[in-house]
Image (tube, rainbow, N blue to C red; front, top):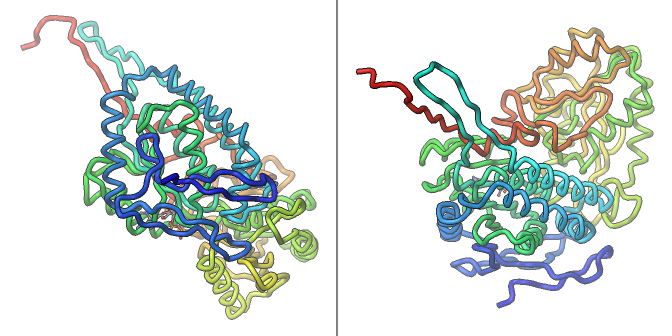
Length: 496
Ligand code: ADP
């Protein structure tokens, strides 16, 4: 069996798409030889069938990752780990168009945006390639009779569960630091978007990684995902996805071997625009904050608070700006917004739009499906949204913006923090003091000033409150994938 199929995209022409599970450096079928189909959200038609991992395949992948960790990988030098990651980054750049086209095909994101994602993947992998041989401990002087040092050691076998909104970027965010720190990995992609992860697995092989270091499974959350979370021989699980599932992951970790857990979960992030903001600039970023990636961002600026002095003017101009966002075929050159990823997500979002209308918020633009084929939704802006409305409280994960009004800085801070989430936030103002005061008061892992959604692999990213545990990216992510060992050596005589 070849575990590969020929697919075609407008950008790449024909290409070979791996379809197997990637275990021990080879593509293979699952134990049960089950398959499932990935659906093209633009056409609503199946793209191809791929092998489905069940609990049994998780067991096999984990035992391979364990053996590789114990017998080979932990003896590979940091410099060599770095070389593998740097090579992988180069291959992502070489195949940038193909990887981006796969994302557009499988996820529906605009090709021009997908290319940015893949560039960021390469940047992230290269950044952690740079870290691999700079992970150092300390010498700690306690007294003249002991010599103490700490070293950072890998955690072991890491299970990683990623979502469908940035299929390859999440792949790179997870694999980069895990491998740099010397762990082996069993990663499960999201069932909606398995194709990019498998193509990237092919690049892992080409980069020369020893078999078993990086294992990639396609499969469903309730089976393969749950098996990873509850596995007795996985030392750590890293998850990005919904808060509901994040809670289940923690429970499964607590109920099994107390594996370490990092979670990057949902958000309902405030985007606060003061009277003195450069209004054109602010509108651009507010538009990008909510409508980028079709609103399918955990950090989406979905709650927009505008100060009363510019409220009406802002809404008029924002409507014009958002109305000009081109919705359509992800492969068309000027497309900004493609389809939502799946029927389920489409239905959920349309449900929220319905609720917003019923709750009495005013639809400024949008509020309907776009076209009659594919999971497209019009960019939707609700104004006059009050704090208790569901569309101001709950994560919609779609192109739906809820706008409220505020008068004072204190009110803006109060409204901004009126959520159980704490992933991101933004402040638009031309007053530096306002920017710094408000950013200090907002309880969120990231505060953007006069911009939005500008993630960078050097900058830590993660949640306050119910938006998560731990930080991804930057030096901070190394703490998620290594553990400190203290070695204390007696130099003096026996004490007792
Ligand atoms: P969404 O609702 O946006 O699809 P999820 O949190 O359900 O987000 O999914 C994110 C990832 O978590 C996917 O890879 C999915 O397969 C996985 N997942 C879903 N349910 C579970 C579960 N019970 N245990 C482990 N992983 C899960």
